[in-house]
Image (cartoon, rainbow, N blue to C red):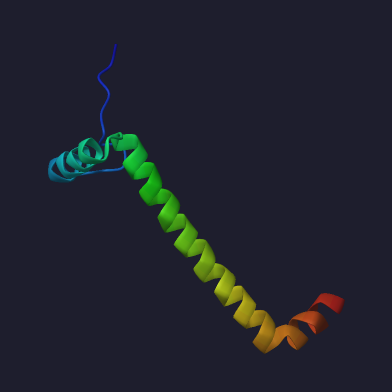
Length: 70
């Protein structure tokens, strides 16, 4: 059976050790720590995109409405 590795995302050995240590201290797993970090990152990016889209709609809603009618 192949050995599992935590290098899929490209973590350095030092990063793997730090995440493993954090997971141990929090009573969780490496995968849970990384998953939580990814979820937080995507949430921040989604919120930023939503703000950009809201701003575009507020500032240029009339143009968007005209373009959608053509």
